[in-house]
Image (cartoon, rainbow over all chains, first blue to last red; front, side, top):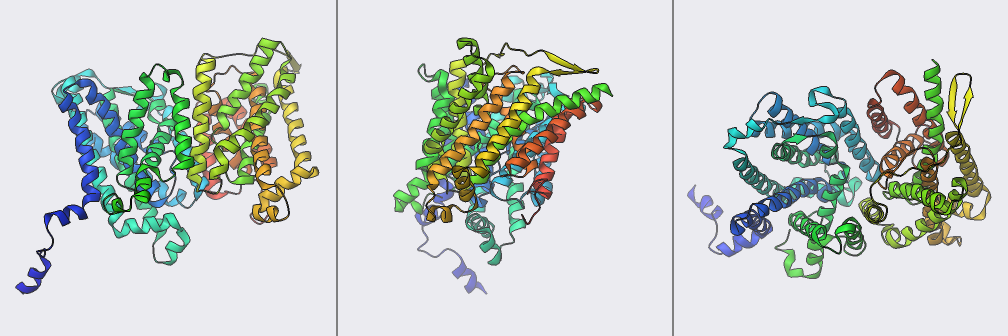
Length: 339
Length: 286
């Protein structure tokens, strides 16, 4: 009995470097994110915490979207609907029913996941442009509905009583708490993204992306796989919506369901490289750094949107596989370590 | 009852303008399977075109519309060659994002050039009274012009050589190319026609509503709804669906608060996409 277990244990050739190499696809992204998380402590400035909050939020949202967009190739143009809806549900529970942040975040995630599950089977039947249009329609419909929904405050939205932050040790403590909660969520998304990418489920999604009909013939149950990818990619935006609006202190329909924000997520995924684990991280960091630079630069300040648009166009036209995809294509040695 | 009728007629007249805006979107979709996300900013540029030609040069807004249409046609051809041509056969995401980056460029430059303060074309044609119903002159003229534009488009597509080329490329681009149709130029022309229709609709809207450079966004969303209602790729369907949307916008506010209008519009939009993706007017076989 003891012999098989011995052979199953790691053979002597499997040194630490071998394990590192095997999991490089996970460790490199985690390392990059840990560095971003540590940055505010390194600089010791509150302002870099705020900047990194935006970067981490972008990375986490882009990575969740990537599970659907990058792996299965379905373009969810209105993905912000999950951020907004989750945010609204959690915010309502915190402000009206005095829930604490964490259960509210869980409730936000559950409601977004549930919405994705209910919508999934119906709208994932649509392909290409039709699916993209449907997701835009859903975002607009839900925003318009919440505009009329009085328990959620209608068009004026809701605000948190400032006293709420006392539960977390005061307002400035709450900012650090939000930052580290976001950091933890970002690490979770990346780990999930990696394991989806390397699993059989993920392989099925990639097959759907390449050719959905062929994938179905090869035994991928496409409707189920797509639905679960949709649900997975919806949960974290719902959770983060609650966190974001908790930190913000108020919620309104327009900022919660801003279509432009949705498209920014797609841009980040494309910039870094769709369908890779590292891509959305590089994309989120790159996009937000660029945006920060353009907004503060005296030359580009007034036309920052136009400059960003021109850069996006250049990427779409000339490096459609994004930074990570381009590196993988150019440097074969990186294919093993960059996922 | 009079209120309902007045509101309905107002909505229907506006519906013609929605119709031609959507026709631009649906034409581009039909010919090359591209959802043009720069549609909204081009509508806004049409508004600014009429505004500046009228207020700076003093030319009549409806004459200005001719210049705006020509500008829209050229701009569309330019956008096609710069942003769309290279990715026309790539997956949908590429063309969506390529046209969206054009959207960002126009909005970015437009905000810097025109600022975000609202403008208004100071022009009126008075109003007509029929019984107890009042109709604004500018809206009536806009609807009539929209009908002329539709008629012109129909004649162009079905009676002219280039129109026949466009229809050939829509049916099968490779086969059209083999028959000697210059397909790249035809694609650019179709994109130009689509943006021309958007610019004209913007110019017409500018004669009765105030606007900013961001004003095109909501008409772009309406164009999506109208195009899907009428069947993506079906220009005549788009005009009829525009009238339906106009009627909805006219009737709903008489029974429910106005804020419910977008809810119903987008729910209808999703239902049509799910259960009748070919649109309201086309049978599955045709």
